[in-house]
Length: 151
Length: 386
Image (cartoon, rainbow over all chains, first blue to last red; front, top):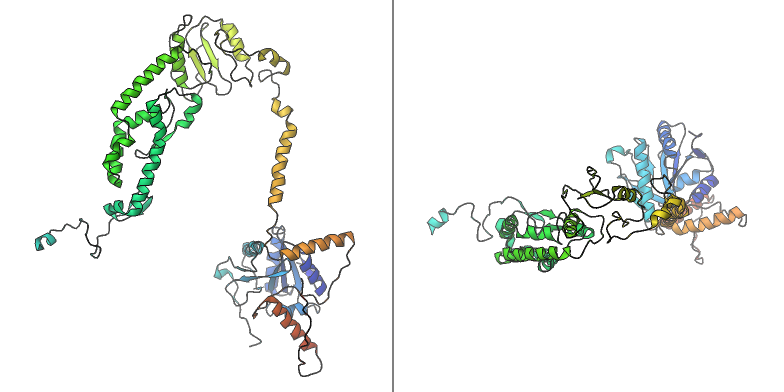
């Protein structure tokens, strides 16, 4: 999917995209191109990237790259794919009923789900909210177990 | 006493509230506009009483106009006909000003009708209005008779005023005109076609000595009786109507109509019949475009982003920086250790704390020596502006 979506491999690239995306939601997918679930998520992202282009930017971050490990640790990424949302260089949280509100873990069931989530984040950000609630019903949210400090 | 208790009909309302009351069916109170199952008791509730008095007062004020015209009937002008609508709250029907010769004529006849009285009484009984108010919401026969007499007087008075020169009008005008023209020596009206409805054109047969009234805007056709007119000249006038001159003459013969000499001027620029383009398209094209543009400007201004949105201050600053970078003025002062604002999962406190935590962790991990922790050095406060 790298021919459609930008893949970032350096911290400086990530920094610049975070700083340069102004007044639109930035979607950073942390994952590996070879992982099947990542592939599915990438497929959805690439299909909807153009449609949401007016209010969102999508980029992929390769977690296998050395430079990006700072972010992997900073964002507490333990499961892939993990998608982090930013708005004006501020991190947007979403309460999707799971334990981790800081990122979206896993893929989306369908393209519309992704767009709905993105819209919810954009609306919340425009109103000044740093955390929004997820518009999707629980059966459409992927479940995962969050490990606390390797426990 | 025991007999009384036994003979208590189940439909009778209980006196005390502690008794189990039979569930009444829900009914709609049109005054309070709500559904309730309190049955007849509802009418005595203070809220209902308040709503009812407000409701009746409102209707009374609407009837004030009607009452005024009852005392002083005046002729209904066509332009006011559309303002004459009244909603009768008791009958639940609209009364409009069509077909009435006098102001509020329809309303007055409605308020005097037997049906209205019946509905009014029913309403007041149902909602507990007090039957002594009946007369204030209707027109009594005496009043109606008085009003009708006054109307007749008006009609006959109006005949001597002469033709008012209102060319376009609903049926009532035609009726009036017929009376007026009757008094003219010259004119002799045979019949009046009263099958008019608003805006419906019924082309009637043209007789050589009959007239037509053509309105380009409303397209009503009126047939009046034969008049001493030259049909040709009249028709010529009729077809030469300027679109601007809605009050231009139709009857050149009648001396009480004003003749507009625009017929002569109109030929040069052309008109609808000659196929010329309308003036608003030619001259005011610039104005049209401006009109189109200004709403765009407005919409652009209104789409200014919410200043309370997330990271608004940062975004503004960043935009300025980018502008300057574009111009090449500002060198990128890019910190390799810059981290975005991020709230961690197990975060307590503000997001800056998570950043600090992270930095502490990275420092710890990068320390090769296992030293005991140095006490934190006090540093002057430097705010981390994003």
